[in-house]
Every structure is written in structure tokens, then in C-alpha cells.
Image (cartoon, rainbow, N blue to C red; front, side):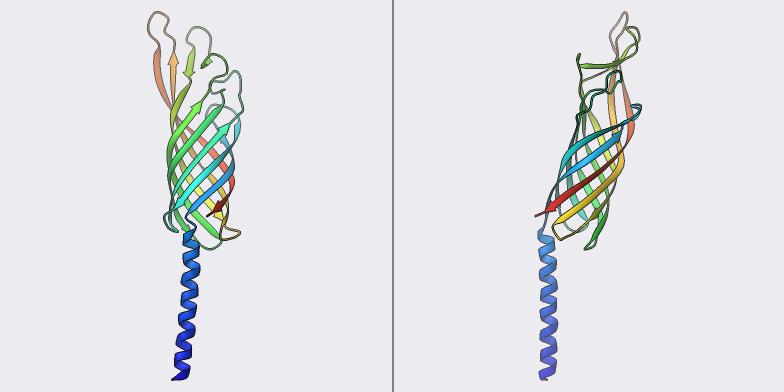
Amino acid sequence: MRHTFFAAAIVLLLLNASASAQAQTDDHKFEVGALYTAINLDGFGETVNGLGGRLGYNFNKYVALDAEGSFFPETHLGNNQFGQKTQGFVGVKAGARSKYVGVFAKARPGVMFIGEVTSGFNCTGGSLGRTCRPEHNNFAFDAGGVVEFYPSSRTIIRVDAGDTIVRLHSETPGIFGPNQSSTDVTHNFQVSVGFGYRF
């Protein structure tokens, strides 16, 4: 009888320790981090580099609210996307994680602002038939995958890869009438590497 009681006590202690450890892990709901990102803009001809930050809230081990903002300081004259760029996304990250690694899919709507260099319009072509993209907050959507590594219970190394879909507004000045407006949807491969902290 004494041995049975002793064994039951050990089992209860182990279960309590396991539950306590799980609770401590689940208590780390919030995440904050910094990142390096690179995007290959469709029709741009080269990769643009930027830096950004990230905030997250973990509902559980499988689903999280994910927010990110990035700034691309590079400018390129002679291209219809030559201004500095800023993007921001808020959406959902869903998947599964273990103690050391996590794999997720992400879907995040947002905006991508493409700035100007001199005139407020990014233009290509001659004076006739010229196509311009005015300074504009363009709707964007980030869809892709995420792999996370956990060196400790609070630290995160995160790698993202996906398609950043941007809706670009264009205007062609009319010769004898009003400007002609059009909208292009571009698909742009983007990767990010960052470090985060849970609290």
C-alpha cells in the first residue's frame, strides 16, 4: 500500500511539473522582433533590400496574429518603381511547432507605399504616351511560408519566403483628353530573415 501511494505521488508530481512547464511556455503570448528583407519587384530588374520590425500574438501553438512593417531606402532613377518603399502587413500565421522548430503558412493583407524622387510621379516613356505611377498607398497581400527555430523558450530565429502581391495604380497622360488610368497586379518574390523574443 505504501509503495502504491509513493508511486502515485511521484506520478502526480511529474504531471504537475509537466503542466507547469507547458503553462510557462504558453504564457509567452507576445513576440517582438527585427528583420532583414529582400523583394524582387516584378519588372524592376533587381532585388531591393530593406529592414523592418515585427509584432505577434500567439493564441495557441497553432495560430497567431502577425504584424510586420519594412522600409526599403534604396532609390533607382529611370524605373517606374524608383522611389523609396514602405510596406506593412497584418494577418494570420497558422501551422504547428515543437520545442525547437515550427512550420507555418501566412496570409497577411496590407499596403505598399512607393514614393517619389522629384515630381511625385514615377514615369517611363517619352512625353507622348508616357505612363506614370503617382505616389500611392497600394493594396498588397503577403502569402507564403514561415520556418522558425527556437534556441530557447523565449528566442526565435525566423525565415519567411512568399509572394507579395501588389496592386499598382498607373496613369497615362491624355494628349487631347483626360488621363487614362489603369491597374496592374504584380507578383513579387520576397524573403526575410529575423530574430525575435517572446514575453
